Image (cartoon, rainbow, N blue to C red):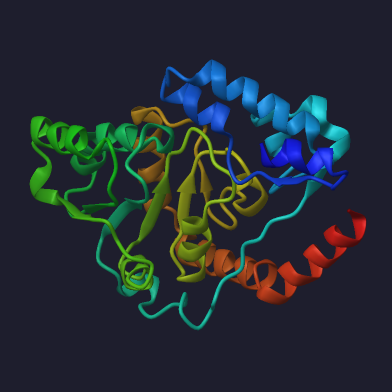
Length: 269
């Protein structure tokens, strides 16, 4: 309704897409998918401009028919006084983990299913799964069935103020998502000198170059996750990759860079 009213009053409509409702509904098999698809199509058709984080999302979110309206820009910036390295990577315990919403589109169930293989390969590793969501009980049950509960910490929701402390404990952050825009937790981890292993979805490939600024896995099957966690942890360049990742976000995700880009966007609109 707000978009229709804006068009009736001859106002420009700009939609900033931070995610795809259609993609998320289809992954969760939501019964309202058809309704969401219709509403999304109407809104995008009426928009004068559509702003997304990466050109990769045009195909991933099925936006090809709106390509002439699309502008690429992100709104992400970091406070590098807060998200910084307080514990050097070599001094951290052998802890790997996931931090985020415990929901289907995040692939966290697949990560939980990969843990028996990961933990059997490395007897020294512990795991952190931080967050709340609809899959929490299912994940807890899965860990109990696999007999790995003793080596997995489930602290629940982690506040934004606590994130730097948690990220500075991890040797590797795993993001096995089916769909993403540009995940904040990835950037925050990299700023804290924590290497990230992620699926190549959304704007992630714009930030993570495999073996240089982080690690990319082909998909989020449990087998693929386990294989790539071991690959990343055994990488002789892990410390250098972490440093490269931090330098990348320091250069590209400052407040000044975001302001400069959005000034260009507003002038274009």
